[in-house]
Amino acid sequence: MASRQTIQRELIKQELCSMANHPTADEVYASIHEKHPTISKATVFRTLGRLADDGEALRVRINNGADHFDHQTFAHYHVHCTECGKVDDVPMPVADDVEKRASEVSDYLITGYTLQFDGICPACQRAREAQ
Image (cartoon, rainbow, N blue to C red; front, side, top):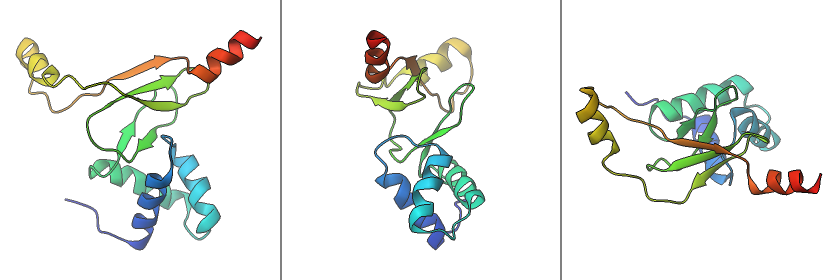
């Protein structure tokens, strides 16, 4: 069951879509709070979770870190910088038979999967080299 559409939900969704990166809930809150100071942090966090639950945003889970959110809901991969925490899209085709193959070899009914790469972003690589 989809969540009801509210003005705050729409504002938060628009804010997420306007952000070029894959922001955390804190980053979305900081950005939207400048324009709409009456929207609470709890509302932003709860709404982002519901957008992800309803398939209107992707939640990018980071081990030992805050979740990031992506307004692009089509299947695609992400890469996470283990130094600065940045999350980017990986511009490569998604293997279309992974779920089917995993189901065949495991006997599980596969309902979804995520693939995330960890590495060091170009900016952090340059910073390392400059040291």
